[in-house]
Image (cartoon, rainbow, N blue to C red; front, side, top):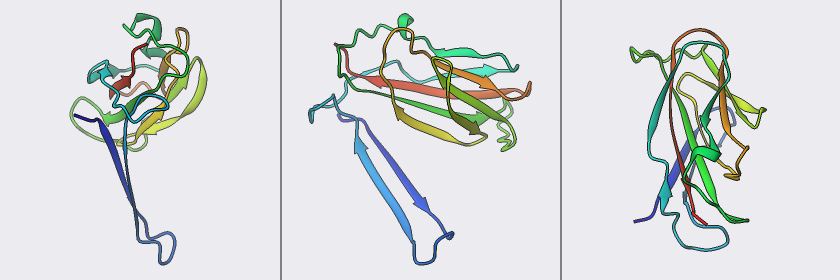
Length: 141
């Protein structure tokens, strides 16, 4: 069974814009073959402004070859009581290079290289409790 990702954007910012819906199948690099490996779905509770590794590539059982495909999904699901606070942000980094900030309820799905040392890191902007859910989908070399 294929792994797919879908997004729908509805907006009233632009007149006559309507909606935008896209779906993609997560495939191996340069092919139509489905990605078949995952780190599995995980949650991580953070409660300080310390930067931590969310996914340490060297610790994963991932042995990619050059030009392999991988995607990482991360969502800021709020605090441990299920409250989604839009003012509580978590900075997402790869190898200490900032990618962006996920505020309460925000998510991302992006390609990653899965190279040892290119870890997915996160750094909360406050000491408030925040929980991230995440998974990586990849092709094994």
